[in-house]
Length: 310
Image 1 (cartoon, rainbow, N blue to C red):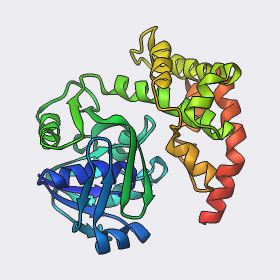
Image 2 (cartoon, helix red, strand yellow; image 1 turned 135 degrees about the horizontal axis):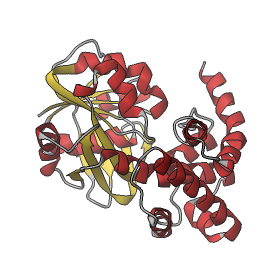
Image 3 (cartoon, rainbow, N blue to C red; image 1 turned 90 degrees about the vertical axis):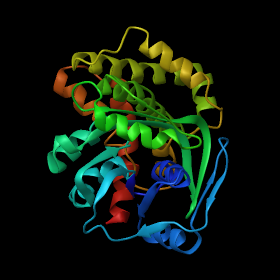
């Protein structure tokens, strides 16, 4: 399959690298230091699933046009709307884009520009980071992508993308019948973990073991579950308990990308995660005091980072 990976951070780099390793025709679309590193030394992945070194990869900084069957979108959630026209230009006649962002709104943002018929929904599960330009370090969680249609059951194009991952090392790809449920199940984990981790500036092992902080984490999860149900998403009554159990199983040093970005003074996915919880709560009449506190506490650092970016 001819594949473009647009945005070569931890997520795009890991999954795109595994597809290239499996023999697919993969072109990485990157910029800045990452573009230079990929051109000069290729892509490296350090992973419990097996290290990978690709000394040479196809990489470009141009996004004017293409004829790709699949575009993996690995940019940050706050960049999706900005790059959507460039993504549209990369798609071939029957091409589809698979967004892998945190949050629950990326696919809809893409669909408004690209067209819903050309967008699949994706949920990726991995703890990884860009250790340095050209090097992805996978730290925890067995890498998995759940793929579905925005509305309705998975069809042939979902099956085609799942097959593309079938020959990869260190990736499990599955078709899901209810994409919205899969998105909100991850959202129930990632937004509270990111917000609480960023406010406390501590990894998951500390956040889950301090009773008062664990209570805040659980309260943030319960608010998200209430919003999901108000929006007709089929989260069951055990969702929060199961998510807390998942948190308890993570390596104690685990942090989220939102947490790391805020700690290091970079623009983060705050608006797509904690901010989205607050906004969606207002829309459907669900109170969000825990998430509102997290959002208000983190907003000054986020705005300062964005002023520096400008």
